[in-house]
Image 1 (tube, rainbow, N blue to C red):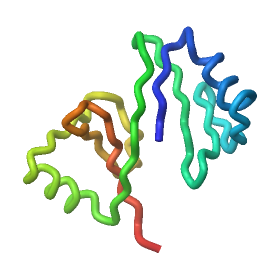
Image 2 (cartoon, rainbow, N blue to C red):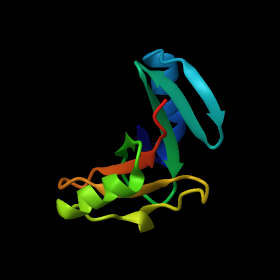
Image 3 (tube, rainbow, N blue to C red):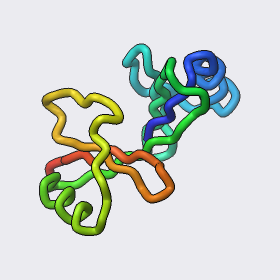
Image 4 (cartoon, rainbow, N blue to C red):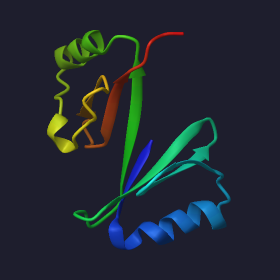
Length: 110
């Protein structure tokens, strides 16, 4: 999951999860911070152009095309313009009816 945090609140937010809550850092990927959050990863990303924090979630699927078609048939609109994705990442952006952004990411079945 990703928490998008205004730039002016980023350092304090990272300190909160690291020092106050005690979550262990698990990845270094500046400018973002990443912590173990139970079985999940909590990414905290600094975003200069927002005024309040947002929580973004990730869904994984073994077949992105099939999942995207199923979501589209259910009326879910893709919102890929929300943030550029790396060209080698098989994924797309969607949002739920309440406006919570989700990364729909293809992950091969092991």
